[in-house]
Image 1: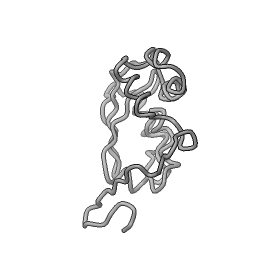
Image 2: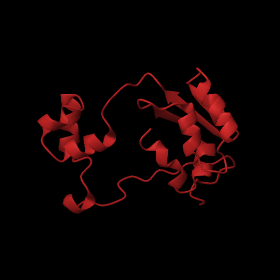
Image 3: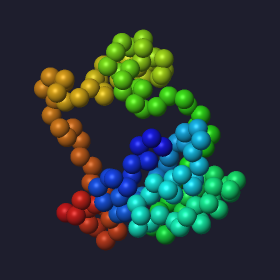
Length: 142
């Protein structure tokens, strides 16, 4: 949810939302109505629809024309990705407070979450994915 809250600021968010269904892990206090509020204005439901969603007990799928978001409401982790990134710059032991020990060791070994300026010899992008739109065009327009 932390990352999805900023979807309206992503590059071509409407096209991305139309291209695939999102799965969002809920954070305490968030609902499907909160997902609707952060969508780009062009696909955001009316305030009346959002109010009805907030009262609804069905908290699994948010669907409006061009947008489908699945909310994993059973995720009750109190840790955020920001905390994990901060701990990744410290010791494996500190990182292990947030993720399983083997995951912490892998993050440290692969130097994940370390900025390019701090990675000797790092080259970006390490991988580039292209998403095909219906009709064969790539998501990036090529």
